[in-house]
Structures are given as C-alpha cells and as structure tokens.
Image (cartoon, rainbow, N blue to C red; front, top):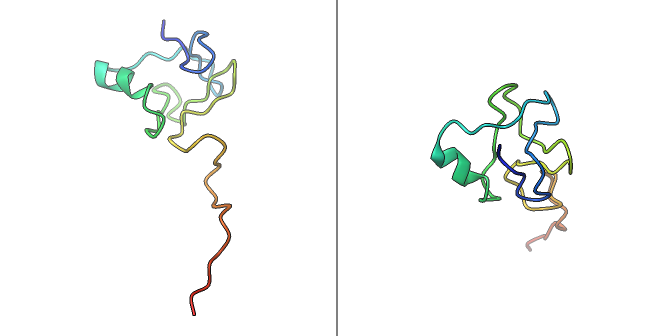
Length: 75
C-alpha cells in the first residue's frame, strides 16, 4: 500500500478507483516531488487521490494550468 503524501490515506485513483502501485522505485520517489506529474497506470489519467482529491499533476498548489498573473505591457 502506498499512502497519499497529503492525507496519508491509501492512495487510490479517484478516476478509476484502482489502488496506486508505482511501477518502480523511481516512480515511487516521484510521489514526494510535487513538480512531477504522476499518471495512474490503470486508467492513464493524472492521479488524483480519491480521499482528499489532491491531484498529482505537477502544478503548484492552487494552480489549475492558467496564469492568474496580470499582463505586463512593454512600451
């Protein structure tokens, strides 16, 4: 069993309900690197913890892919 790095419950994919089992030690170590996206080996979608809904998408916490920074004009 692999525990979620955020809620410490068993890491289960929210999309397919499969218990996450990393393919190798390198993939297991990537769980503790928030800037690395993790894909569920069963459904091949970004892994999201079933319990706390935290995505292992490699994005900074609170970032959903879009930039909220104001545009800066030059000139």
